[in-house]
Image (cartoon, rainbow, N blue to C red; front, side, top):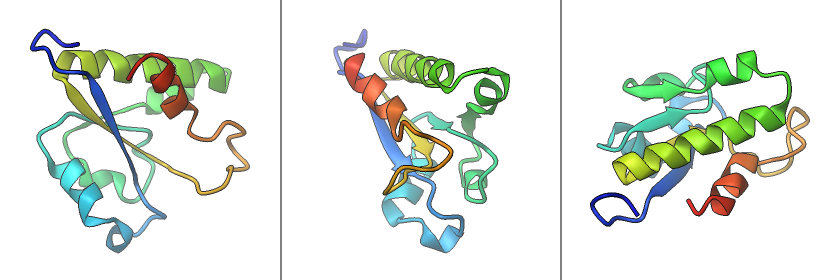
Length: 116
């Protein structure tokens, strides 16, 4: 629980396949809303829609293993949610495993373990 007695929440939304027109109204509302927004990467065409956001690009660029990346991101998201009550994590959501990531949605699973 946060200091205000609110259960910390991380709302996850997808950045879509690349075109602004492909984003749902719900995702647009989250990116424009009052909650802090964290981006998996700014290297995505729709990431620019989240003007006031924090990116995890440096974590990806500096890590030697994806396990480090996911543990760090999930920890930072959990801490931010504890501080703010609710945060948005805008990422790349795959409907099938990505060839680049053998652990799809691992950050979400790690947040669940951390009670997020």
